[in-house]
Structures are given as structure tokens and as C-alpha cells.
Image (cartoon, rainbow, N blue to C red; front, side, top):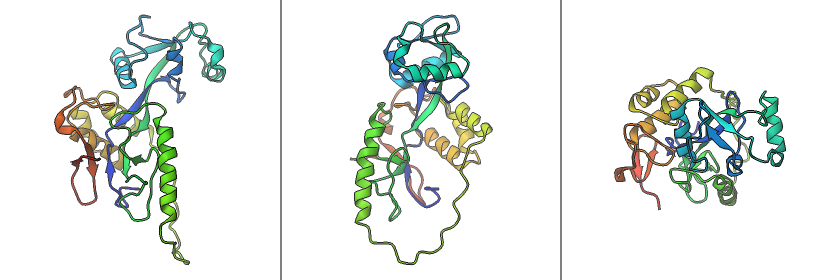
Length: 262
């Protein structure tokens, strides 16, 4: 909707994947479990990664292994009673055996380009939180920074909006709100396969040609960033390149450009 309205967008290639989501569900297993001593095992029961490494490194190691399990048996599970109950409700007993986990898309770092008070490129439209590209996360994100971003930029946007001219007394009748957009399973599978934890040019080219506008934009941005940086990992270009130090931005009527924000 934002792009259709003419809002500039940036950094859509940067999607953070959380390493440990219960396989077959949307239940996120906090990394505090790994901080308390839970370990990741491959299908032979062998530990294969430093569980406290950055999320993108852990996620890539898991993808390389295929099926992966989180062993919670050695931790004090009484410290996470609600989470343990949810795991049991999903049909697993973490006290008896390791449980299957998988990386999952968790946080969109890019979004609508804003200034330091949340203004977008469309007059009167503000953005804050996960829908916004403020640049504060760079190419990766520390866990709690998203909450701080919402608090800081949400307040700034609200205060700035108060200084906007008042709305006309008689506003035109608004068009009906579009129905809630839920991506079908086929689209989710396509984006996971072609723009998941590990990416390659063929998959990104195919995604760029997708009929879904959001999926296509993700493919377009990720294809243009021909390097690996932060959460964006290209198997054909596995290291960062100085040529891409900056933010990829798409503005109405223009091609993607690399901008340097200060």
C-alpha cells in the first residue's frame, strides 16, 4: 500500500530470521533458552554450532544441517513455565527428548523511508516501528532494539504530527478498507525457498518476477545487493563489499539507488 501511494522504501532485502521456532508451528522459542544452556543438535544427536552466535550465523548453520533439534533437558525448565506448557500443547515433551526447530522469518528491518521524526516521502504520512526504515538497525538487529525504536520514533512521530495543519472539516468519504491480506501457503513457500536464510541469484531472479508485489520487491532488492551483509546472505557473494555500503532505496519514478544516510 505504501509503495502504491508513492512512499519511498528501503532495505527490503534485510529480513532477520529467528533460529529457533518450533517446527510446524509459529511458536518462537526464545534465545534465553540457549542462554540458559539449551543446545542445538543435528539428526545424529551431535552439537554443531555455538548457540549464542549471532542469529544469522546460527540460522545458516541450521539450514546447512537440515533437520535440527533443540535439547532443553539440561536447563531449569521451571524458569519458563508458560513456554513449556505451550510446547507440551504442541505434542512434545521437552523433559524427555529434544524438540524439532527451524529458522523462521522474524523481523523486517527495511520498510518505508522516514526522517528522524517519522515523516515519509508522502505529505502527512508518518511511519514508526517495523514498517519503517529508519536506518537504526543497519543490516542486522539486536533483539530489544525494535522496542526502543518504537518508543523513540513513535513519540517523535506523534509530536511531529501534532504540528501538521488540521484536517479539513469535511473530509471526502474514505474508500472501504481492503480486506486483510494473508499470504497463501504457496507464496510463503516460494519466498522461503527463493529469499530465505541462504539466497542465490536464480532464486532471487524468479522471485523478482513474482506477481505478488511485496515478494517481487524483496526479490528485486536482494538481487540488487550482490554481496552478503548482516542478515542478507548470498551464496554467490558470501562477504560484504565496500561498493554496497549504504541503503538501497526505491523512490517513485526512479530505479533502485544506493544512498548514504547520516
